[in-house]
Image (cartoon, rainbow, N blue to C red; front, side, top):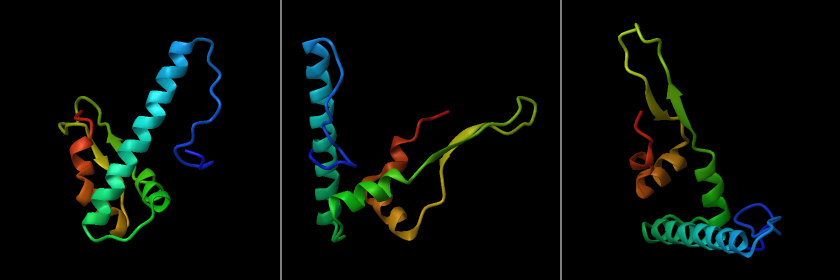
Length: 102
């Protein structure tokens, strides 16, 4: 959590103890989820550091395709183009199941 770019617990500017506790909970949950994803990727045989993994995954974007109501085509959400490495990582972590259904 000392990394200045990813998953850092920067000094929050909240007024109440409850908001500080919630902020801390979110930071710890982010660290836990990213560590579990890293473990899953490493068990699949992909040698990658946690910062590299987070950088690769953070550059995957969702794209919303919205069409006019009379176009006859349903609007939907897709993933942007991915590099072969991003495709492999997203497949191992089943990123496609996290898409918001439109």
